[in-house]
Image (cartoon, rainbow, N blue to C red; front, side, top):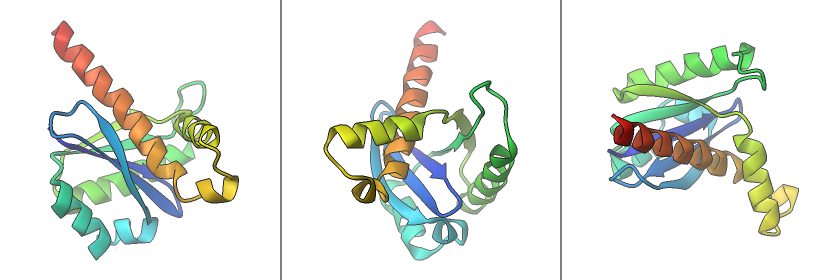
Length: 142
C-alpha cells in the first residue's frame, strides 16, 4: 500500500511517499501550500506519478500531546485535500519531526538557507517512516 505523506505548513507543504510495499518512506518535494490546496498541476502530477492509496498528514501537537490551534487548521486543510483526491485520510503525530529533519540536514553540512526548502519534505518522510513502522508492528502483533 503506497502512502503519500503531507507536512502541511502555512507557506509550504512537504511531501513524502512510501514504497509500494509500505515499508520505506522517501522525501519527494516541497510545494507551495497554495498549489496543493488548489489542487494545481504540480500536485496532481505527484498523485498521478505515485498513485497513493492513503493520505497521511502530520498533526502538530504540543509537547504535552494536546492539539493546539495549528492542529485545527491542519485538520481542515487535510480534509479538503483528502476530499479532492478521494483518498482515505489518516493523521499522525508530527511532534519533533521538523527538529529531527533540521538535525539530519545539519549533519550533512547544509546551512540554514540551504535547508529552507528541504526541511518540510524530510519531516514528512520522518513521520511517514514512524507511521509505517507502527503499522508493521501492529500487523505483526495482530
